[in-house]
Length: 99
Image 1: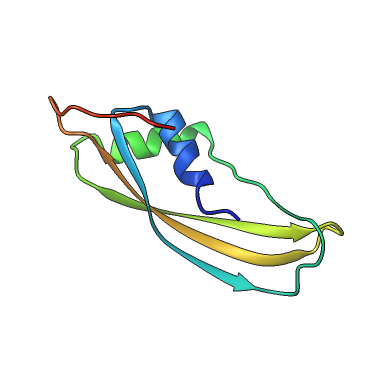
Image 2: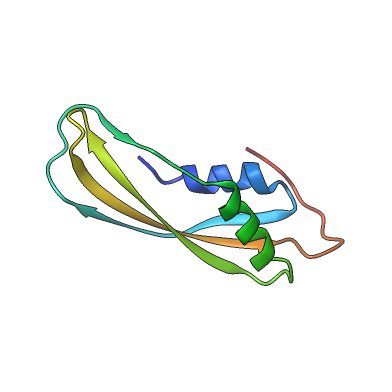
């Protein structure tokens, strides 16, 4: 349910000069989810700047993002932890940008 969203958001905000991959994920189920469930994904401008600064030397980094999944009643039913691999593309490297 939540796999591609942080990766897609980062690809959008960082642009095609960066490589962004899903690296790992874990989920902790807290209670049964019945019916419609919701998740909110947030990446603020400060996080985007932090990623850009950490990858300025073209070395890869791993960032962990945590989000909660809620049911219709607003009860938290699960917690997901996503690890992403992020790297600024080496100079003079051709790239393909697909969303």
